[in-house]
Length: 407
Image (tube, rainbow, N blue to C red; front, side, top):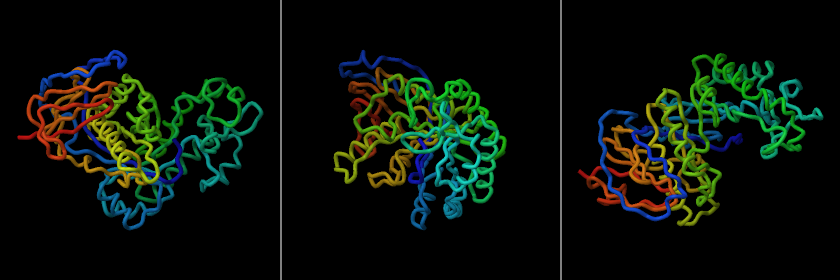
């Protein structure tokens, strides 16, 4: 990921798994009508309200600080953003994480001069030149180097102590480093990247996480990673920047297979119920000067992602965010659906044909992650969020809905 200072993340909470029917998308070709069983089993399995996360790499003015403090529960801001004090004053309960990439160094970082003087902290190609990320332009740092580890940890620790940060958001916590062959994120041919770096990378990164966590003590360490095991166990939780629909996907891009959707929902469930933080980051590309049709598409994807999140979240440390504070739909990363009074979830998610459902004290969440549409006959009347009373719902491909009980 590694984005400069231009966005803000938001959270949400709630869910788990009761019965699962793993169907191949390829086998679902015709719309079907199915009947909801209305499985109700009271056992609070998540928080009563949705936690909202925003990410803003911007300087906060009074208006921005007030909006963030009143609408969100968790903020990710640059470690050099001193105006986060305003947000903490307005909302002492908000969690504020300071952003710092764990393996990247930019020439505009405040500590560049010091880092630049330590050649052994950098990764190098077979010719001895520093490795550079082709799309972002940063220098790749050696997370196995004791000097780099110490510098990073000390830098972060000092920043956390200088302002009311609750922890650090460590970006680019890669499981593997591309080298030798395959995908090439570097400015040199992939064959020029030493394979020995790839061979030691996983253990080096795990060691880096453990070192930083020990250094910052009681402060939070949240890592942006695809890893759901060792890396998460070594810190306080993770950010999943590809939750259901990544922010760099076009509205009609659902290239992830159904099984990948389920993997994301299940990883959310497993990690959030363990007590670790899980920041579910979703989004979509919105054009400049969007049309009404563009806005409706974006909102539909937001609802699909949010409903998917509500299926899986369990425990109080789940968080959801869609795009960022500079989102081109004018939302500033906040949607009224985030404050729908669903109440506690009363069961884990379950499947009804190719629709996935979860029941809440005050409503129901439905998601269709497949390629075909389905109609669901509900076990009782529900209300849509615009007030329409319904006894059945048709969900198109890759869609979701939040319903409230009519009675």
